[in-house]
Image (tube, rainbow, N blue to C red; front, side):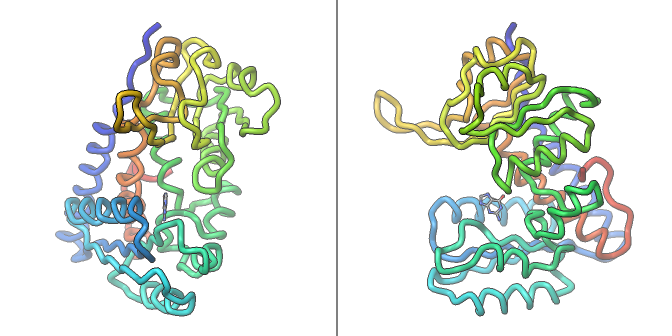
Length: 297
Ligand code: GUN
């Protein structure tokens, strides 16, 4: 079997198109422009690239983008003061603090100082609790993007065996909650899981989010399974230079799977699209308006 390639780039463009339609309606009918504030502390090169890309796409869908770039030595109190200002700013509907933060800043404290209603990353402890108890919440962008692609490919996920490889707060744990919410039988596996290949072989859906380049080979995949690869790893090419690979060995997995997301062009583009979707959702909730269909969990 050769897997269907799930085109995350095209899917993300569709999601951004829906977001843009809602933004137009919010502006024209209600006179509201959704606004997203992104806070970057320090000069981590990868974070700078992400933040630039987020700002550009925010503007492209017609929303306001507020970028706050702070020095690497910014004190915790200065950062908390900025977040309080953004929490109280009615033009700001979503707040994202780019992670990782410099070591002297307490990420948990900072994230939990964001108004949960504006927490478009879904990392605030209230949103984590709401998601875990099946209540309406802001949902982390990467797992939300994975869920959208899975629903689009499968229709119903009910009763399917899902194995999430990776237990991070950003991807693995919320992904498992979302799959459970869609009535999958969910296993969270990780680098210490016993007999990991056999566990993965049980899966109708594999979500790979371990951060280890090409860790999952094709012979761990049940024939016909759907493979969602969250990994973005840069590896050196034998001939020099480097390239991006996922957490699964693409060629061997694609030969066995029923469907697979490529790297790049799979999950990656969906993350920013879902951030924009979450900002529109937050804006609608803040204004007591009906939420866009199909853009939230
Ligand atoms: N750094 C890497 N991924 C993310 C993300 O999804 N949100 C934030 N805020 N920082 C990140």
